[in-house]
Amino acid sequence: MNIFKCSIIIMMKNKIESTFDAKSFKYVSFADKQLYVADYTERTNSVRSVEVLNVKPTDVDALIIQNPAKINISTAIFTSHCFIDKNGEEPPQCECIMYPTVLSAKSFLLFIEIKDCKPKNAANYHSEAKEKIISNVQLFRDKEIIDNDKIVYAVVSFPRKAKTNFHNHLIKASEWKRFRDDYRIMIKGTNEITVKNEKSIS
Image (cartoon, rainbow, N blue to C red; front, top):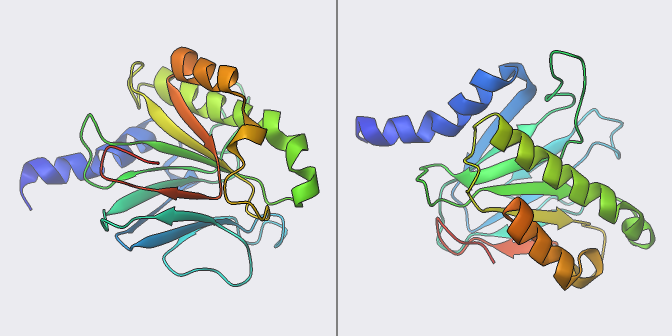
């Protein structure tokens, strides 16, 4: 691997750790055809938290990431209180950011929010989940980790819901357009997504 590619690979991690407390993030990378993002926080009383796995968990429902091209994907997992500022303020926090390990300006960036609640309670968390996404994307823009004009992806997942895709319940068309136009976020409510290539997710 040449020096140029090495510098690209560590760029996202370096940007995050030069801005926030390095100990507040966990990193994993996989190039498997399927990945799983699971939130163990509530079920284990915070003994375990968010985990990205390459084997389907049997003890918790998870967001499924289809990766048919076997792209090497890295994830920076946000641990508890990782974004506290110098004034002790803590913004709403989602779970993690996922991206191709070898980054370019056109690579996808995916912010993930998971709510491990009973399906009947999911609607109670719709607004909170969207606020977390908006807050964290804007924080990354403000800190110059990602460019202001970069369009990013976001997924809100309720893994216990039987329906894989519940997008229309989470966000109406007019609100989706506002996310796209005002926040430059392509948001989707689903429990399964596909990484099509290094630039695109569906």
